[in-house]
Length: 447
Ligand SMILES: *Cc1c(COP(=O)(O)O)cnc(C)c1O
Image 1 (cartoon, rainbow, N blue to C red):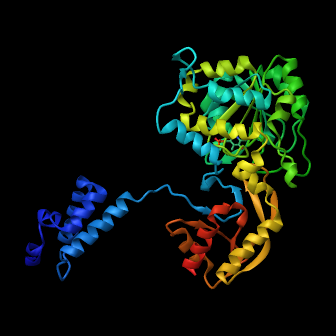
Image 2: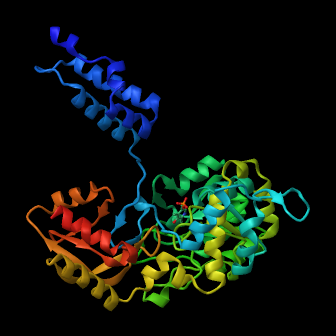
Image 3: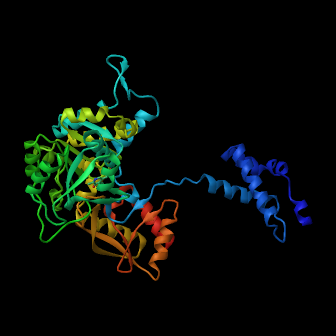
């Protein structure tokens, strides 16, 4: 153990030029911790030959890089899944990013009424745009759609019954299950009908027997029921609800302001349709087909929205200034009829197969390998279950595709690709145009 005595002291190490650089980059307290940790490692398990000053400081630097490496980083999404929940759902428009920057580099009028020079409400910021876009009397933005459902059920039906069809007892993933959310809200869940079929009469009977406060309809975001099935239309449900003076909440999940049929996809229910059918409240996510920040948006009757706004839970699930800024900028794209040009997910949705083929071909040409083959992109994100868009991908055939996928994930700018038919597929649809060069460089590095 005599060798340990030969170790330089912390002070001696700190006087070196290398240590000076570590202090300059990482600050003195953290650099000091790293130098101590480096020495402690050697003392805890002394190696045969004692490390010198250089080796000890090299180790300290590695520790500093490890401790300060960001955990949340950008990635290139080459999976072809447009709304990939694990990859942060919707990428945002430039205007949305700029709006967030504008209100967060300094102060903002988040809750300040500039005209009157006194306290205002953060709730006004996106509401005006939502009213104009949807024609709804009122709107409320909260943290996410799960919170929107929870708030609506709590404020409108706590300790009372809520009717929902058995065909709609959904689990979205990430722990969002309608029955669990209802339990949290304190509302009593009354299941209507059978797993495959529910009829208007089921609602009418349950209204008489259970005296509910609310009817809930939930969009089957991530699955389909096929075969011998039946469900009343939203309009029919609304009629039954209103005949008994009851409100109906329509949880659209994704919800969209643009008709997806434009892109050869099946029709995803739009917010306007729900309101037109008479839903009293409609709720949807900000970062699914809306293509904005994480948010839960409620639109509908003013008296109900006012009740929600006043509920104590609204304070706990409120949207922050970044969300409100980005959401307003996103909504403005729709208002100005420029969503397809400005909102990334709609640009991806609208990308034509020929254009995608050209990009995949350009990647293959630059790399000098791989084939361009037809494949399918998906929308994802709890919308349009199992629906696909025709695309062309760069396909690389290799001995160990899983190792290549892993190496791609470990890059400083990680690339997430997908494995299909033992090949690694890179789908240009979800790769932002400005990432083309980075993607090609990444693939070149791992090959
Ligand atoms: C996605 C989804 C939710 C949850 O929305 P978040 O914004 O992720 O909280 C709720 N209901 C339905 C029907 C959904 O599809």
